[in-house]
Image (cartoon, rainbow, N blue to C red; front, side, top):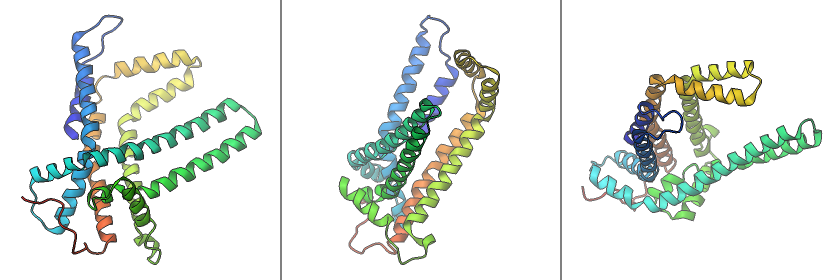
Length: 274
């Protein structure tokens, strides 16, 4: 996952698009290569998810690992994990679009009190739906791979695990532990994103305060982005984010295994035949 992302960023950074209407063959090839790296990242994402689950579970069991065997097992889960990725990420995307539509409706309504109240009610509904779905899919990856559960079973068992442990202290329940891990990761991603783009955001904010014409503002922002060149700090922070990303999956597997207290004796190791 790290290599395609780095190749895509470097290609986009060092090969600039041509000015005007001239067609630059090198730019076209670079754009095509970056697009292929993006598609490769998407295709390999389910393998990456399954591999993290298998690797962490086998280390927790104290088994020796074979990279080839692990990759073979991860590829075997590709169709199921890919389908679940499309569903889970698709629902999150639709919920975010719903929130943006509510914001657009509020801006279009002007000073209408009734419309503001309706928008607030819809926003509360959107937050409730987002939070409920987030809780239900906290552990779908672990059940889809480690328990070899089907599409529906993975979602159902993820919901049941997230809502279990009612007799435990709140900080020991799978729901709160998973939410804590996700919150830390979101904070890290936000800090990395703001740190990488802080100078650009300040420039955009100053232009927003000094420019009244929206079209001129958009043109100034585009020109500033083209003139900024390769942002080495943003690239380095992006690489750091990709390196730290597996820790999130590992942490969720640890929470899942710990919530089981101990692995059932009838469950065989995921990776076989080293």
